[in-house]
Image (tube, rainbow, N blue to C red; front, side, top):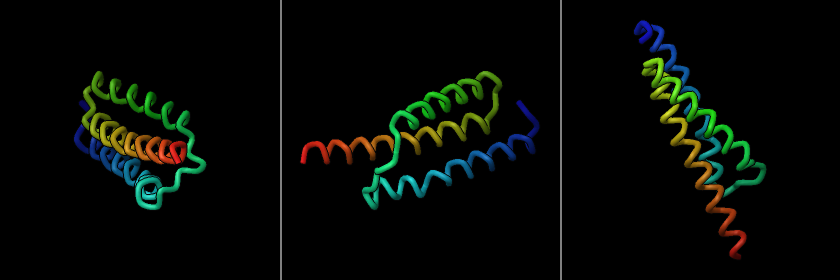
Length: 92
């Protein structure tokens, strides 16, 4: 495991990365806007984050583990919201 101050930098970077997704979540879940969101891109990002999570576990990096778990949750929230909206439009 890295020195505590190095892990702290990683945790701050991870937190900022998570906060960056808040506007996207708000657009999808509150404003119900999903135009321009590529499910393919989000799916690829999900795979990449999963691999980073595995890497973080293998190198024993708390910052990488925490950041990637929470970012995956946030991205899954966007994916679920977009899928829900698009299914609703298809049914209408």
